Length: 270
Length: 359
Image 1 (cartoon, rainbow over the protein chains, first blue to last red):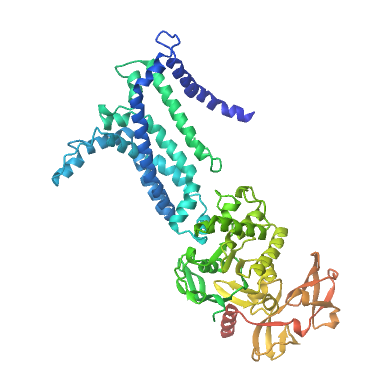
Image 2: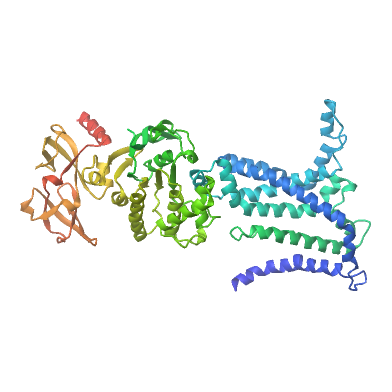
């Protein structure tokens, strides 16, 4: 009884700010401006398939790059002594103390045609290179912004692996590479899956990064949705339909991912 | 000496300026069951880790089959370890845990399944192949850990307090089983424990350690009956340890009275420590013995009674199947055979010297 009373505020919160908005998205997606049921907007979403593909593709590349950077870093971290570990973790977290927008603006000034990087390259007679307003810049922005969300879950799972299990692997004939492949990696999979979730989901729906670093030519789903609600092509119903389709796609991808993750000790990562 | 499988020469390990191992010298013969015994922090686990290759000594040599193996990583040594808390791989089932070492060595699956089956039979776990590690009891996990190590056919098996987490009954069963396995496979076992009873039950040789030094090496019987100093006597079983004076060969003074004994070679008028085991003492009428006291307490211990006898300047522990009356006056009697004479321990000696100088 006590638990129920304590849970009530959270329940109200979830209903008002999560469930109701979701239902509203679904409502607007399946109705026209006069409130009549229609499937037009949902079927209209199909014409934006290239944008969906590009969004998923860029989010995928960013997630893989994050994983490739974060995993070895986490592995190196757990081998260090505790003081260095906490210092390194603080450095990883440090950019997150600053506003996301400011950090992305900083990249704009660095990557621009007259930016710092081209200026330095110009001194040695190279460039200028077009770096801003490219897909590469968008991926860079996503990796930079979401990397900590990959490092932290992997690190926190890895740091809990019993050191004597690693010694057992060495005792049974594993050098450090084999120990990594046969023991550390399988045991750290839950962290890898939650890291992938925490990077992939925000990356697929981002719009600020693509707007600022990708210019107009690299429109992503996030930008598309934003345009329907706040931009000049104002169309709430279409925006809701695109959002709904995006949610379904993310849900599908996460379910597939969880099928792999659940094999290990049944740990849920979502 | 080629029959020594493991030899430690002057091993020193220091950690943060503190000496964990102080010039350890140890020779372990092939097919021997050797136990490193001592209180926690005595250096026994450190010694084991040096043999296993998990730790390198600051100085001294580790020899294996006559070859120096300092700096050789664990995976290149023909040694396997049963870890204190088993350290089984939680992501693998029983079969895959046991097969792990063989798969790393790229042994054909057919051979692996034959050897794993042998091991499961050896440790009485047939039928548990597909069981998840998390669904095994402590005793079963212990067996998997032993099988996982032994399946590699190591020349030496290292066991780091492997029975510490088991309850008393299971521990006794596993003691007998480990001894059986060791005799059946004819492998050298190096076993670390703080449990003196465990050490005496299983070992061919017991190495008693304290403060990073080896106190005594010997057979269980030797260690129990002829402890070299008061620490060993006190650690191996309950003891009455008294200060005494060796008058001459075969004559010793204990608590003001002179007794015949069987020891010699300590010199004349030498201060010594004396051990008399509680079960060696016979309680007699007060006038029949040179020493005596008042029975202070009588505790029933199952097989025997444990009695504390308040003597003139010493409190005796006596084990007997017959209970004396509390408060009764008794005589304390023992035969010359029961008196074990030991050299006085070094720190005691120092204290004695300074005390004498002050006088």
